[in-house]
Amino acid sequence: MNPETTAVPYERLGILIDGRWIYEAERSTEVVDPATGQTIARLPFAADGEIAEAVASSQRAFESWKDRSPLERGRILRRFADLARKHADEIARNMTRDQGKPLSEAIGEIRFAADHADWHAEEARRIYGRVIPARDPRVQQMVLREPVGVCGQVCISPTRFYVQAKGHDRFLARFAEKIASTRVGNGFQESVQMGPLCHGRRVAAMEGFVQDAREQGAEIVTGGERVGNAGFFYAPTVVAAGTDELRLMKEEPFGPIAVVTPFGDFDEVIRRANSLPFGLASYVFTGSSSRAQNAARALAAGMVSVNHFGLALPETPFGGINDSGYGSEGGSETFDGYLNTKFVTRFDQIPQ
Image (cartoon, rainbow, N blue to C red; front, side, top):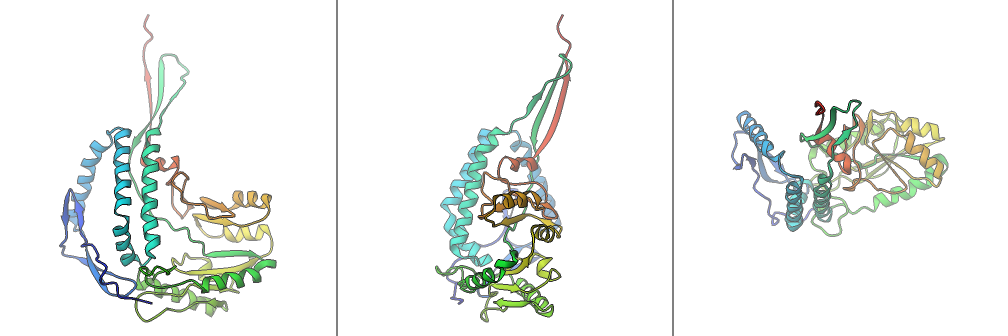
């Protein structure tokens, strides 16, 4: 389950501020390999003065960066993509040691990031302003888009599975069988489908969700326990026969737990699905075209994927609503969060 991975090197961690690396600091925290529970590095923390220096350095860099042409920015982004692909294997190895995810998934994530950089390198050349026809021929009205700069984090793994009552038992049996067959282990093993959780705190959180489900009378269909004695492995878990009062129905577990629950009619499932303040991604599987269309409109989510898992491509918008964040990344909507909109109006006398 947990083969020794100390032979796999891990980068020395530092903080890059204004072109210089800082490796030693008064405060630091350990980095733990989640597959073994062993400390593999220490991550230094920036002091207040270093944080201020980083902010000032970023601001200085931004003053010149914002005036670079879209063509030049595109070249830099494409260079980033090329380097990411070139070093994907070594970056992925560090990710697997740091996060635990299977190595093949880590490599895929790096390549996907490179795809994003390539797509946006081209799309950034098409950030257009516009001219608004004026009511007075002596007035010019223009809308300009000027750079700002921001970033964020996402998670779109489904947790709550609402299944129509007449198909619930059949779905639950097949779903639990599939989940139970998931190969759990060290991310460096080729056959592994799921690695450990990233930290011991997440294992404790999974145990809390399962305990709450049991106390409320729900059924743990498969999983529901740690795997092995080393590392932070937790068995993929399916919960059923619970109510909407389960913590799993109200909170994002950020772990390998899913809850399956039946529903009666369309209005009921939409009401239950929209009952939380979160709204990142929803998935709908149906054989009815009209149900698909109505569900896509009714679900309070920033993204709805119907009859497949089709989210997070570079050319499509990715983002949530309500407590799941603001704005989007991907697609032309990416740039809305990075740009200020400036309206310019100018009056000129018409020459006589």
